[in-house]
Image 1: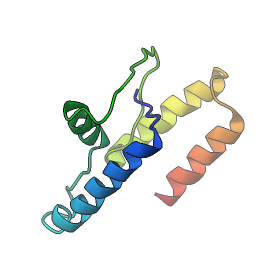
Image 2: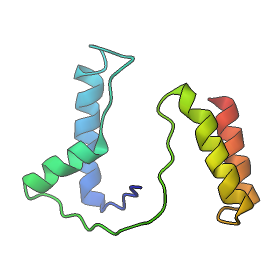
Image 3: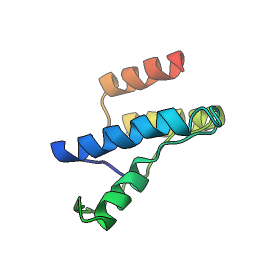
Image 4: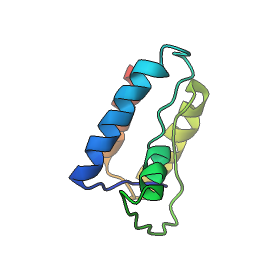
Length: 101
């Protein structure tokens, strides 16, 4: 699982890279274009413009990349709710978000 906590300075570079991505990459292949924040962060580290601290987690990452992923993620969230790891309010938000996507 990755959770990013960024300092304000990083957002300037991220904005530049995202604008560049939208202008140059998306028009080439709209359906498969991806702007990967980890790639941008690695480039900033390599240029000495950013530092990263990493913390270990034993949690399982859940994500939806393709519509087929949705049911597995929803089942995992339901298990987390049943086990008390997430609240009913968070589950309601997840269900609402799933309904609009």
